[in-house]
Length: 294
Image (tube, rainbow, N blue to C red; front, side, top):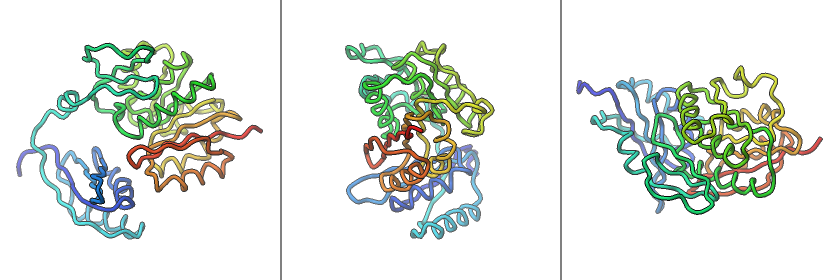
Protein backbone atom coordinates (compact mmCIF):
# COMPACT_ATOMS: atom_id res chain seq x y z
CA UNK A 1 0.00 0.00 0.00
CA UNK A 2 1.18 3.51 -0.76
CA UNK A 3 -1.01 5.38 1.71
CA UNK A 4 -2.58 7.38 -1.09
CA UNK A 5 -6.23 8.38 -0.80
CA UNK A 6 -6.77 8.95 -4.53
CA UNK A 7 -6.50 6.44 -7.38
CA UNK A 8 -6.90 7.02 -11.10
CA UNK A 9 -8.16 4.70 -13.83
CA UNK A 10 -6.91 5.36 -17.35
CA UNK A 11 -8.07 3.83 -20.62
CA UNK A 12 -8.28 4.61 -24.34
CA UNK A 13 -11.32 3.99 -26.53
CA UNK A 14 -13.43 5.34 -29.40
CA UNK A 15 -15.72 8.38 -29.22
CA UNK A 16 -18.73 6.09 -28.74
CA UNK A 17 -16.93 4.06 -26.11
CA UNK A 18 -15.85 7.20 -24.24
CA UNK A 19 -19.43 8.30 -23.56
CA UNK A 20 -20.59 4.79 -22.66
CA UNK A 21 -17.73 4.23 -20.24
CA UNK A 22 -18.06 7.69 -18.73
CA UNK A 23 -21.71 6.93 -17.92
CA UNK A 24 -20.86 3.44 -16.60
CA UNK A 25 -18.02 4.54 -14.30
CA UNK A 26 -19.65 7.71 -12.98
CA UNK A 27 -21.68 6.00 -10.18
CA UNK A 28 -18.49 4.47 -8.72
CA UNK A 29 -15.95 7.29 -9.14
CA UNK A 30 -15.38 10.68 -7.56
CA UNK A 31 -14.96 12.30 -10.98
CA UNK A 32 -14.89 10.99 -14.56
CA UNK A 33 -13.40 12.99 -17.44
CA UNK A 34 -13.19 12.40 -21.19
CA UNK A 35 -10.54 13.87 -23.47
CA UNK A 36 -10.27 13.89 -27.25
CA UNK A 37 -6.57 14.21 -28.24
CA UNK A 38 -7.46 14.85 -31.90
CA UNK A 39 -5.52 13.82 -35.01
CA UNK A 40 -7.40 10.53 -35.08
CA UNK A 41 -5.95 9.35 -31.77
CA UNK A 42 -8.08 7.33 -29.32
CA UNK A 43 -10.24 9.14 -26.79
CA UNK A 44 -9.06 9.00 -23.19
CA UNK A 45 -11.26 8.25 -20.18
CA UNK A 46 -9.96 9.09 -16.70
CA UNK A 47 -11.77 8.20 -13.48
CA UNK A 48 -10.67 9.16 -9.96
CA UNK A 49 -11.52 7.08 -6.88
CA UNK A 50 -11.27 7.87 -3.16
CA UNK A 51 -9.86 4.39 -2.47
CA UNK A 52 -8.40 1.55 -4.49
CA UNK A 53 -11.37 0.25 -6.52
CA UNK A 54 -12.11 -3.47 -6.71
CA UNK A 55 -10.50 -4.85 -9.88
CA UNK A 56 -13.24 -7.40 -10.48
CA UNK A 57 -15.91 -4.71 -10.20
CA UNK A 58 -14.13 -2.55 -12.79
CA UNK A 59 -13.73 -5.49 -15.18
CA UNK A 60 -17.44 -6.28 -14.92
CA UNK A 61 -18.62 -2.68 -15.28
CA UNK A 62 -16.43 -2.00 -18.31
CA UNK A 63 -17.23 -5.34 -19.98
CA UNK A 64 -21.00 -5.02 -19.52
CA UNK A 65 -21.05 -1.39 -20.73
CA UNK A 66 -19.02 -2.18 -23.85
CA UNK A 67 -21.06 -5.28 -24.66
CA UNK A 68 -24.35 -3.39 -24.32
CA UNK A 69 -23.09 -0.58 -26.56
CA UNK A 70 -21.37 -2.84 -29.08
CA UNK A 71 -17.93 -1.25 -28.68
CA UNK A 72 -14.55 -2.93 -28.20
CA UNK A 73 -13.63 -3.54 -24.57
CA UNK A 74 -10.44 -1.57 -23.77
CA UNK A 75 -7.59 -2.44 -21.46
CA UNK A 76 -7.22 -0.19 -18.41
CA UNK A 77 -4.78 0.63 -15.65
CA UNK A 78 -5.39 1.87 -12.11
CA UNK A 79 -2.61 3.64 -10.24
CA UNK A 80 -2.16 5.88 -7.20
CA UNK A 81 -2.18 9.63 -7.66
CA UNK A 82 0.68 11.56 -6.07
CA UNK A 83 -0.36 14.15 -3.50
CA UNK A 84 -1.04 17.45 -5.31
CA UNK A 85 -3.17 20.50 -4.71
CA UNK A 86 -5.46 20.10 -7.71
CA UNK A 87 -7.57 23.15 -6.91
CA UNK A 88 -4.48 25.36 -6.64
CA UNK A 89 -3.13 24.01 -9.93
CA UNK A 90 -6.46 24.52 -11.64
CA UNK A 91 -6.66 28.07 -10.35
CA UNK A 92 -3.18 28.80 -11.68
CA UNK A 93 -4.18 27.59 -15.16
CA UNK A 94 -7.62 29.29 -15.22
CA UNK A 95 -7.45 32.07 -17.81
CA UNK A 96 -10.25 34.58 -18.55
CA UNK A 97 -12.77 33.41 -21.15
CA UNK A 98 -15.04 35.49 -23.39
CA UNK A 99 -18.32 33.91 -24.48
CA UNK A 100 -20.55 36.46 -26.17
CA UNK A 101 -21.43 39.15 -23.66
CA UNK A 102 -20.08 37.08 -20.77
CA UNK A 103 -16.52 37.43 -19.46
CA UNK A 104 -15.55 34.61 -17.11
CA UNK A 105 -12.50 35.14 -14.93
CA UNK A 106 -10.99 33.94 -11.62
CA UNK A 107 -11.63 36.03 -8.53
CA UNK A 108 -7.97 37.01 -8.36
CA UNK A 109 -8.05 38.45 -11.90
CA UNK A 110 -6.61 41.98 -11.79
CA UNK A 111 -7.32 43.11 -15.34
CA UNK A 112 -10.33 45.00 -16.64
CA UNK A 113 -13.24 43.18 -18.30
CA UNK A 114 -13.85 44.15 -21.95
CA UNK A 115 -16.10 47.14 -22.45
CA UNK A 116 -19.76 46.15 -22.30
CA UNK A 117 -19.04 42.65 -21.03
CA UNK A 118 -20.95 41.09 -18.15
CA UNK A 119 -18.29 39.84 -15.76
CA UNK A 120 -18.62 36.54 -13.88
CA UNK A 121 -15.97 35.77 -11.24
CA UNK A 122 -15.40 32.09 -10.45
CA UNK A 123 -12.63 30.03 -8.93
CA UNK A 124 -11.79 26.38 -9.44
CA UNK A 125 -13.84 24.50 -6.87
CA UNK A 126 -15.41 21.15 -6.15
CA UNK A 127 -18.37 21.76 -8.49
CA UNK A 128 -18.16 21.55 -12.28
CA UNK A 129 -18.34 24.64 -14.47
CA UNK A 130 -15.69 27.30 -15.05
CA UNK A 131 -16.63 28.20 -18.64
CA UNK A 132 -13.57 26.59 -20.18
CA UNK A 133 -15.29 23.37 -21.25
CA UNK A 134 -16.93 23.32 -24.68
CA UNK A 135 -20.34 22.49 -23.22
CA UNK A 136 -20.35 25.41 -20.77
CA UNK A 137 -19.06 27.85 -23.37
CA UNK A 138 -21.66 26.62 -25.84
CA UNK A 139 -24.43 27.28 -23.31
CA UNK A 140 -23.12 30.77 -22.55
CA UNK A 141 -23.03 31.63 -26.26
CA UNK A 142 -26.58 30.30 -26.65
CA UNK A 143 -27.79 32.44 -23.72
CA UNK A 144 -26.09 35.47 -25.26
CA UNK A 145 -27.99 34.95 -28.53
CA UNK A 146 -31.29 34.39 -26.73
CA UNK A 147 -30.79 37.64 -24.81
CA UNK A 148 -30.74 39.55 -28.09
CA UNK A 149 -34.29 38.50 -29.00
CA UNK A 150 -36.33 37.76 -25.89
CA UNK A 151 -36.66 38.52 -22.20
CA UNK A 152 -37.64 35.44 -20.15
CA UNK A 153 -39.41 35.99 -16.85
CA UNK A 154 -38.81 32.67 -15.06
CA UNK A 155 -35.65 30.61 -15.61
CA UNK A 156 -34.18 27.31 -14.44
CA UNK A 157 -30.61 25.96 -14.40
CA UNK A 158 -31.06 22.19 -14.06
CA UNK A 159 -27.85 20.47 -12.91
CA UNK A 160 -26.30 23.81 -11.97
CA UNK A 161 -22.78 22.67 -10.94
CA UNK A 162 -20.90 25.86 -10.09
CA UNK A 163 -23.96 27.97 -10.93
CA UNK A 164 -22.27 29.64 -13.89
CA UNK A 165 -25.33 29.42 -16.16
CA UNK A 166 -27.72 30.57 -13.44
CA UNK A 167 -25.46 33.54 -12.74
CA UNK A 168 -25.21 34.34 -16.45
CA UNK A 169 -29.02 34.32 -16.79
CA UNK A 170 -29.44 36.48 -13.70
CA UNK A 171 -26.93 39.01 -15.05
CA UNK A 172 -28.44 39.04 -18.55
CA UNK A 173 -32.07 39.50 -17.50
CA UNK A 174 -32.08 40.63 -13.83
CA UNK A 175 -34.91 38.22 -13.12
CA UNK A 176 -35.34 35.16 -10.83
CA UNK A 177 -33.41 32.00 -11.65
CA UNK A 178 -33.89 28.67 -9.89
CA UNK A 179 -30.73 26.50 -9.78
CA UNK A 180 -31.13 22.79 -8.96
CA UNK A 181 -28.51 20.06 -8.53
CA UNK A 182 -28.53 16.58 -7.04
CA UNK A 183 -25.23 17.37 -5.28
CA UNK A 184 -25.41 19.39 -2.05
CA UNK A 185 -21.88 20.69 -2.64
CA UNK A 186 -22.89 22.10 -6.04
CA UNK A 187 -25.81 23.90 -4.39
CA UNK A 188 -23.49 25.39 -1.78
CA UNK A 189 -20.98 26.53 -4.42
CA UNK A 190 -23.74 28.00 -6.59
CA UNK A 191 -25.11 30.07 -3.70
CA UNK A 192 -21.59 31.24 -2.84
CA UNK A 193 -20.84 32.21 -6.45
CA UNK A 194 -24.15 34.01 -6.81
CA UNK A 195 -23.33 36.07 -3.71
CA UNK A 196 -19.83 36.82 -5.02
CA UNK A 197 -21.24 38.03 -8.34
CA UNK A 198 -23.93 40.26 -6.87
CA UNK A 199 -26.93 38.21 -8.01
CA UNK A 200 -27.85 36.39 -4.78
CA UNK A 201 -31.20 38.20 -4.82
CA UNK A 202 -32.02 36.58 -8.17
CA UNK A 203 -30.51 33.06 -7.85
CA UNK A 204 -32.11 30.49 -5.57
CA UNK A 205 -30.16 27.22 -5.32
CA UNK A 206 -31.75 23.99 -4.09
CA UNK A 207 -30.79 20.31 -3.92
CA UNK A 208 -32.78 17.40 -5.24
CA UNK A 209 -33.07 14.70 -7.91
CA UNK A 210 -33.71 16.83 -10.97
CA UNK A 211 -37.33 17.56 -11.77
CA UNK A 212 -38.34 15.42 -8.79
CA UNK A 213 -36.62 17.82 -6.39
CA UNK A 214 -39.00 19.08 -3.69
CA UNK A 215 -38.60 22.68 -4.86
CA UNK A 216 -39.75 21.67 -8.36
CA UNK A 217 -43.13 20.39 -7.26
CA UNK A 218 -45.89 22.33 -9.00
CA UNK A 219 -43.45 24.48 -11.01
CA UNK A 220 -44.45 24.27 -14.67
CA UNK A 221 -44.02 27.84 -15.87
CA UNK A 222 -40.41 28.37 -16.94
CA UNK A 223 -39.73 30.48 -20.03
CA UNK A 224 -36.11 29.30 -20.26
CA UNK A 225 -34.41 26.13 -18.98
CA UNK A 226 -30.68 25.42 -19.25
CA UNK A 227 -29.45 21.87 -18.70
CA UNK A 228 -25.76 21.12 -19.18
CA UNK A 229 -25.60 17.49 -18.08
CA UNK A 230 -25.03 14.36 -20.22
CA UNK A 231 -26.92 12.85 -23.15
CA UNK A 232 -28.61 10.00 -21.29
CA UNK A 233 -29.98 12.12 -18.42
CA UNK A 234 -31.12 14.73 -20.94
CA UNK A 235 -33.07 12.07 -22.85
CA UNK A 236 -34.56 10.64 -19.65
CA UNK A 237 -35.74 14.05 -18.44
CA UNK A 238 -37.29 15.12 -21.76
CA UNK A 239 -40.94 14.64 -20.66
CA UNK A 240 -40.43 16.43 -17.34
CA UNK A 241 -38.46 19.27 -18.89
CA UNK A 242 -40.98 19.79 -21.68
CA UNK A 243 -43.87 19.93 -19.22
CA UNK A 244 -41.98 22.49 -17.11
CA UNK A 245 -41.68 24.86 -20.10
CA UNK A 246 -44.36 27.39 -20.92
CA UNK A 247 -45.75 27.28 -24.48
CA UNK A 248 -43.16 29.09 -26.60
CA UNK A 249 -40.51 28.56 -23.93
CA UNK A 250 -36.98 27.53 -24.85
CA UNK A 251 -34.36 25.17 -23.48
CA UNK A 252 -30.59 25.14 -23.88
CA UNK A 253 -29.19 21.61 -23.72
CA UNK A 254 -25.55 20.53 -23.63
CA UNK A 255 -23.24 17.87 -22.26
CA UNK A 256 -23.74 15.70 -25.34
CA UNK A 257 -21.27 14.66 -28.00
CA UNK A 258 -22.07 15.64 -31.59
CA UNK A 259 -22.92 12.07 -32.59
CA UNK A 260 -25.60 12.02 -29.84
CA UNK A 261 -27.48 15.03 -31.22
CA UNK A 262 -30.13 13.04 -33.09
CA UNK A 263 -30.94 10.88 -30.07
CA UNK A 264 -31.46 13.91 -27.85
CA UNK A 265 -33.36 15.87 -30.49
CA UNK A 266 -35.62 12.87 -31.12
CA UNK A 267 -36.52 12.63 -27.43
CA UNK A 268 -37.51 16.30 -27.30
CA UNK A 269 -39.33 16.34 -30.63
CA UNK A 270 -41.51 13.57 -29.22
CA UNK A 271 -42.48 16.07 -26.49
CA UNK A 272 -43.42 18.82 -28.95
CA UNK A 273 -40.13 20.76 -29.00
CA UNK A 274 -38.50 21.96 -32.22
CA UNK A 275 -34.82 22.71 -32.85
CA UNK A 276 -34.04 26.43 -32.99
CA UNK A 277 -30.28 26.12 -33.29
CA UNK A 278 -27.40 23.70 -32.83
CA UNK A 279 -23.73 24.57 -32.33
CA UNK A 280 -20.60 22.50 -31.93
CA UNK A 281 -17.41 23.16 -29.96
CA UNK A 282 -14.68 20.51 -29.88
CA UNK A 283 -17.09 17.65 -30.67
CA UNK A 284 -19.50 18.79 -27.98
CA UNK A 285 -22.92 19.97 -29.07
CA UNK A 286 -25.24 22.65 -27.69
CA UNK A 287 -28.90 22.59 -28.70
CA UNK A 288 -31.58 25.26 -28.40
CA UNK A 289 -35.14 23.95 -28.67
CA UNK A 290 -38.53 25.63 -28.36
CA UNK A 291 -41.81 24.23 -27.12
CA UNK A 292 -44.74 24.73 -29.47
CA UNK A 293 -47.58 27.01 -28.51
CA UNK A 294 -50.70 25.16 -27.40
